[in-house]
Image 1 (cartoon, rainbow, N blue to C red):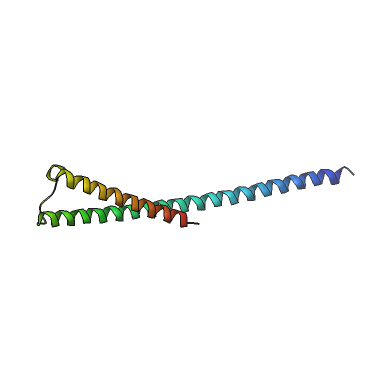
Image 2: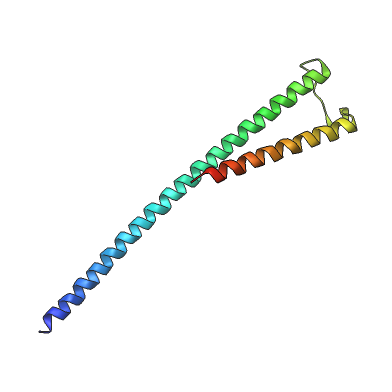
Length: 111
């Protein structure tokens, strides 16, 4: 009579260990997938940022070329009139605000 309860104890213990191993495996896989997703999103954000910076640099180069009339002239901070500098800063701030709002909209659309 003492054998079935002892056997039931060991069966229960083995079941609990097996369930724990399954749970551990599932959690590990879930965290692995989450890490991959996070890395992919960071890479996409980095690529997006690179594209934005590249566009901004091209636009700045085009604006400089248009302003100076030549493609080889470079503009420094000292060459810009203070009013133009403030206007450029304001434009950049507006563009940064636009990029932030687009990024927030993008993040909110993710599952």
